[in-house]
Amino acid sequence: MATLPEQVIKAWEDREGPVVFATVDTAGTPNAIYATCVSKFSDETIVIANNYFSKTLENIRAGSRGAVLFITKDGTSYQIKGSIEDHREGPVFDDMKTWNPKEHPGHSATAVKVEEVYAGAERLL
Image 1 (cartoon, rainbow, N blue to C red):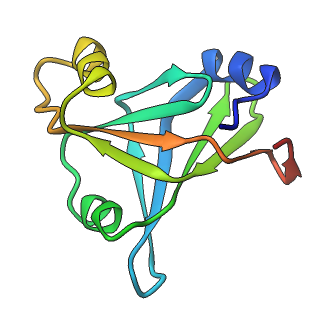
Image 2: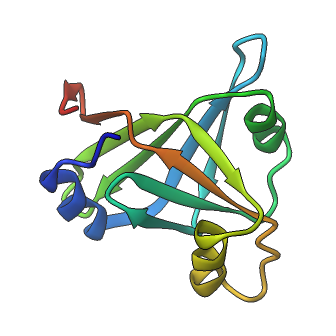
Image 3: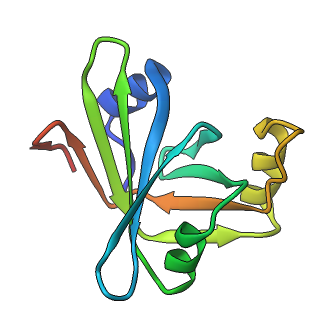
């Protein structure tokens, strides 16, 4: 299993604003959303709380891979790409319930497994 490079682990702690989470449907049509309820579960997994997914959830159920794009306070962008797992119970789901705001439903915890990592156009992993 791939892990985030140290540079990206540090950058994650310095990110600013929401992340962009992208998936694709079975025809290859992209779908991108802003996500504010996100966390690093481990150095191998980024989690997005499924509070109000619609097309995104359809794409995940159809087997889409995903990409998480974020920017740091100094304007450096990073992209993490990988397979997606949707957790409705277990450790990843339980962890999401600890940080997802109580006013949001937290239907599931969407885990992006790290497979590729970029800093801007530079491939780091």
